[in-house]
Image (tube, rainbow, N blue to C red):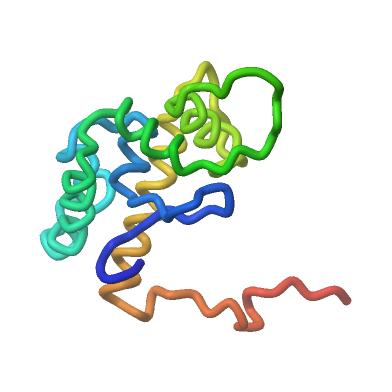
Length: 148
């Protein structure tokens, strides 16, 4: 979270991806659905999340296709295959399926499970931003596995 905006960060992207753009690329189409998935019915969370939706509108991203093209243009191409470069939306789609949250399975290019996982993580960030007691202390001994 930077300056009130939540973003998806990964080494394969040249820029941080605004969370609303990431969710649109994952197939969540309407802004209202994104707001309800991430902030729920809690008004304070909705107010904290609304600048993220405005950021997507400022970038001119309103559809899933536009979001995938935007992500594809900011994806580092790792493999060097001879021949013409693929379209940006294909690069974006591949990065969402194969690189981002690889532990969440994708069946028949249905990205719903990944979208729900990202929305849940976003809600946890909003909750921790308002109540700092919800942040886990990674150095706490209870969070460690001990070998005897």
